[in-house]
Image 1 (tube, rainbow, N blue to C red):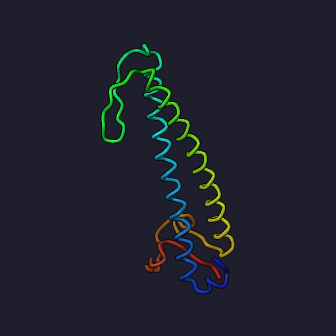
Image 2 (cartoon, rainbow, N blue to C red):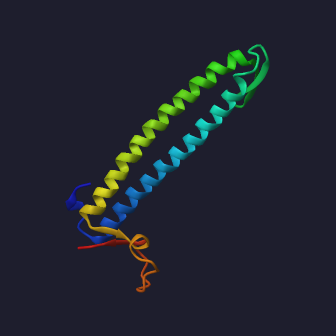
Image 3 (tube, rainbow, N blue to C red):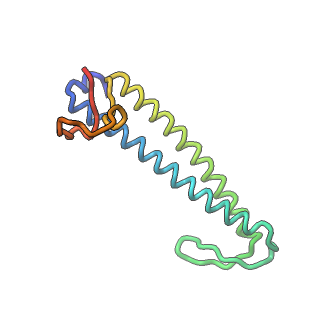
Length: 135
């Protein structure tokens, strides 16, 4: 968005809140993928020491399929690797978005009330969602 589009304080606040929401969405996606990675890691660690010919069940879509550990383990490891790559990509996006938010804050001299003040605002006007824009 160009600087000319952000002439009013309200437009600046809306743009800032959108950027912060995108940043939060990336953080949430990163956390979800991290939990997913850890779940796959736990399953892989539990299956590795077992006999490869041993039967196990795997949920494929909505169907529970009976297979052997040696059939399932490579698929699990491949999926874990894909999740790890996706997690790295999301973390790069999060870093870029964090820099974009910081640059926006600096450009428009934005301060968050809860970061800068120990208590609630005395004005009672909270329409901006805790965002202060300095002119």
